[in-house]
Picture 1 (cartoon, rainbow, N blue to C red):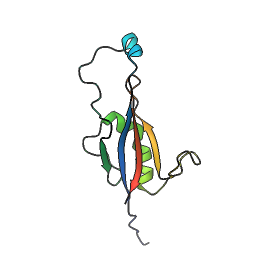
Picture 2: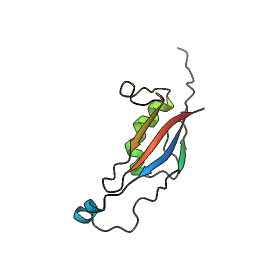
Picture 3: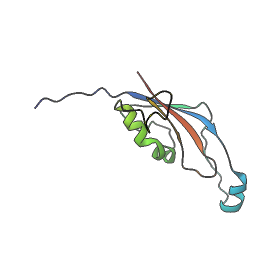
Length: 107
């Protein structure tokens, strides 16, 4: 049986927005010293669907399945959700200070 090499696409991950909910933090969060250090405009590139070096592990968990699918050439999530069918907008799972990431395939 022949084997085929499938060229995996690189996926660029860009931090595009960050917000905080101080009211929720005051009510529910224990004070922490090192919250998220992602900055707007920060970029990473996933190769072969793997977590890029320096990417927050918790943020990666929220986007991993989308990055892996995009790297395989899949797209059009949720029947036309994104203008670019080979992209996704994903937020990390921090309910106090979520960061939104734009994922897109690159050649």
